[in-house]
Length: 371
Image: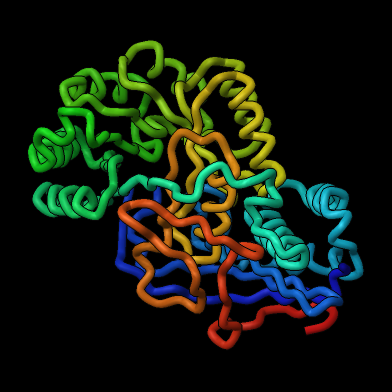
């Protein structure tokens, strides 16, 4: 099974707008899609969000350009040699995890489709058929945030994550509104309330906030300080009782190894776009598991295709938490096949990612080999 062609596409997905400390307002997802075509007529797809400069440094234009530079290297390669193909892809350019993840996902989808198995099976086997997702509550008034929390619990979510970083008083007003809205459910342990600062605080500021918020019983504080401040993460962990999770800091295997070695965090949050694909993501998981550090498999707000990739990665993992409903706010998209049930994502049976793609809804950017 050889690659005979690669097409790079663009598509903007409309969504219910959101905002958090690092993203600013986001009104649409600017996605880049790759299609890998084989000599047997199989097509594998990958999707990565382009407007996520605040996490990977990518823009849609940069992601598409780098993917177009790497794509010709795939034409003529055998999918049976996928590990070697991915190694060559990784060596071809430094960094650019988003473009590498885009092609890595498409290659895995093509190989799994060709073998007639799911991507989760290709990754070692499905450990669970449903992934309970976290509900993300973006910036809004305390009243609206409370309503979001109540709706999430009614839908079946059991972890509710409040975005913070608006300032102490505004953050506390929203946390208090959520706690009051959830009432006994949150206090009785049935629903976990967590917070995500997206790097908004300085270390001492984060500690002051967390000490004031001890009464909320937060399950964790995610990325309380900027991504590169590993010393700050450790400072927060050592001076506050709330568990500390790294997200933006946990970029790839090297960063995860350093975070573990420095005992800087209690939990880790992994995403395919940061890792550079399934292959490096599995390395990150192995490091965390060897060190006994629990981790979450998550994603950006993305379309259904990228969401399915995260779901398959999570299904084949030993992750403790999952944040894999990133397509939920998208109002229209050229993908179909992923289902949600009671706050949990149902792992598609396959083959491949189990997602149908309507290429007429995509705009071609570059074509290499056959189309």
